[in-house]
Image 1 (spheres, rainbow, N blue to C red):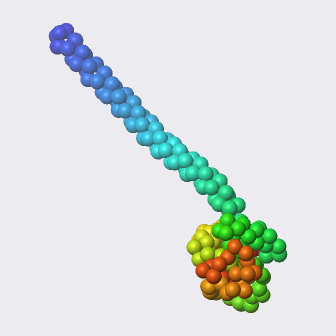
Image 2 (image 1 turned 180 degrees about the horizontal axis):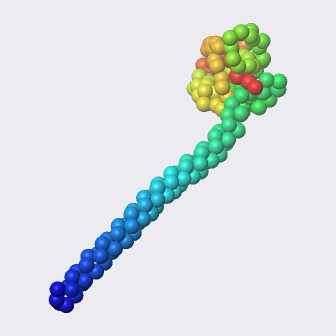
Image 3 (image 1 turned 180 degrees about the vertical axis):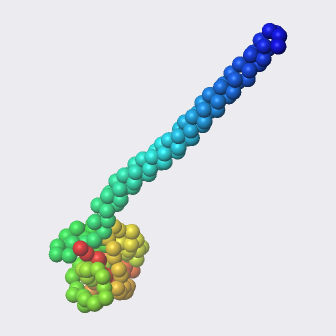
Length: 184
């Protein structure tokens, strides 16, 4: 063999060997890069999941704060079982604002075994115009208390009642309402 052929053969062999080594290292680097990219993608997914959970936790905290304020408001829904002063003041204030005379009397109520709530019962006697009575009734209906109307009757005032309650006329009404207000 001539020197030229030997040099060409050595160059070709070293080039092929170099290419094989380069391809081997490139494959190793690409494999490692592919593994690193998949690790990075899984870390990104975990970060997104954690951020979503963090957002849910902050939403839950906000919900808890709202529910706490709702819970404190809901405590006002129930009248006091022992001393329902706030309820009686509500009746008196609303009747006064509606230009009605009011008589409030507690009534004993029969406990119902399957009733889940405790309650206080009252009979309200209201004297005044029918329109004023309807205003009072709407305020009662929209009040913060849980009120259940048991009985209601409306009659025109008698002459005796007109004389008893100054400022009323024979065109006015007397409304008797039996109700119960749920208590705690």
